[in-house]
Image (cartoon, rainbow, N blue to C red):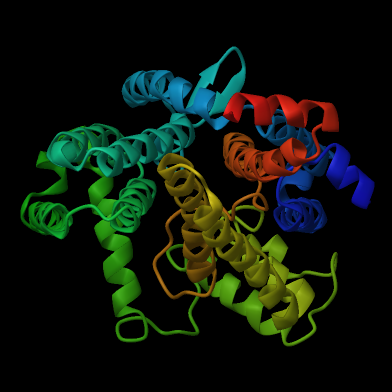
Length: 408
């Protein structure tokens, strides 16, 4: 195993172990949580085989990406940003709708979410712009302005159909800029604009009738309704009543309660047959039901190890861009993780965010694997840079006099 990591899986060994552990856990839990999909497909293996195929493809992509220098990724991120912006516009008009949200494009029989590509591109481009600010502080306003323009365009396009994704992306870039020591006056103005925009949007939804609102903004009524229903639960609703509006939350709570400390063991979940999104939004509830609180804590620890190691890696990076990029990619994974877990435990309203690398998905799994691949690649380059002085010190003895003569 040690030879495998040293020879082929270059980069941070701890993160490779976390990555592989999450993939294995994903296969186990998807086999259990996809019972409703198996029933629809009339095949017990079809859903999990599809998921396994995406995971294998994702692992291969992560391996390939970790061999690519991050300088090349830095350049191509701008092409990805332009392409994702065009696709986000296209999905507004020709998007495939699921759960009343047009987030998917179907091209050549392949269904994918342009917002996933947009998230990846924005994080890389933001890391580039932030690193340029650190290298040239006198142009701080120019790069900050460019970052804001990018965020307004991309997050604005995502926001029309997916509030939670837009909010997470905005938050991650904000934290990246804070860690990159961008002026607090700029960050303060950025936060103020966001708060004002949210208040105006909420006020518009509460005062303008839904039938008078332009179609592209009608998803806002769904978000406000979810927030209000979540804040009113236990006051206006009987907590023992299950209906179409609270079905996912209630069965998710029941699944967690059934798990106890040690769980009912994989494959023995009952609530998977009642939870509409047991294989995606609420897969953490199934994990806790089958593996208990201990299993839930282990999963949380795996993601926290990722964040902790990312912080350590950032301190070893020779460039600001690589350091900010590692932080941004790990934050995107971990923040999305805890939002998914918060939904499963009814701490926040339902958002539709999958559990990274574990929930069922196609685009989300592949893009998350690219996140890991980039982080692996940066750690690989750090190791190679650390080995350079050693290799130079092991030069043949007959080359040493040449250096001495040149010094003379």
